[in-house]
Image (cartoon, rainbow, N blue to C red; front, side, top):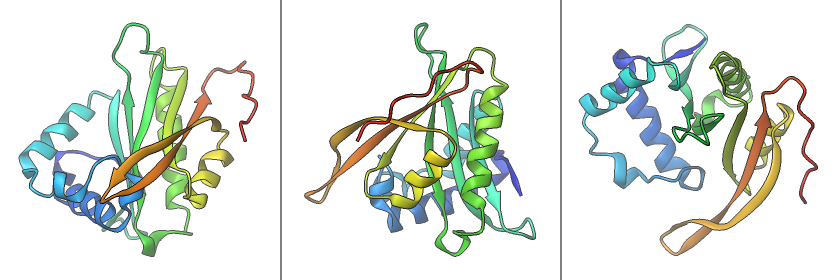
Amino acid sequence: MIRILTPDDAAAFQALRLRGLRESPAAFGSTYENEVDTPLEQIAERLVRGAGREDVMFGAFDDDGGALVGLAGLARQNGPKSRHRAGVWGMYVAPEARGRGAGRALISALIAHARTLDGVERLVLGVESGNKAARALYHSFGFATYGIEPEAYKLNGKYWDSEMMSLSLKKTAQPYTELR
């Protein structure tokens, strides 16, 4: 089951987000240490703002609709010249839920939602260059690589590159030529 998270999901969101930050540090721009002490009230407030439709966090729940097992966020750009773009952020699926379609369902729901937002024409994201599964998932939806940001993230002396990807939501869009 996929749905937009609400303030009632704050504790489950925080637990899964912290797990992702701890277990997959290369996948995120933030760190466990940076977010571990965030009060639940602050997280709930962010999820309330998401109810405005343009900045939302999708959650994937296990088969019985109980445990939150996956996350994917959508954030519309605010500037007058960039409101036609929205960013995908915070994508994470718990290891025990991988390979069962949760990631695919999250991205599918996120893209469908983005298409309902007036004026949003393009989705953008960054993915750790070594994450083959995530890269393959995004490519399968038509995201195209437009560049690599070398050493985009650094933690404890280790660097990770970020592969920058984009998906046109225009009906008549011409595909990018893939950079390699």
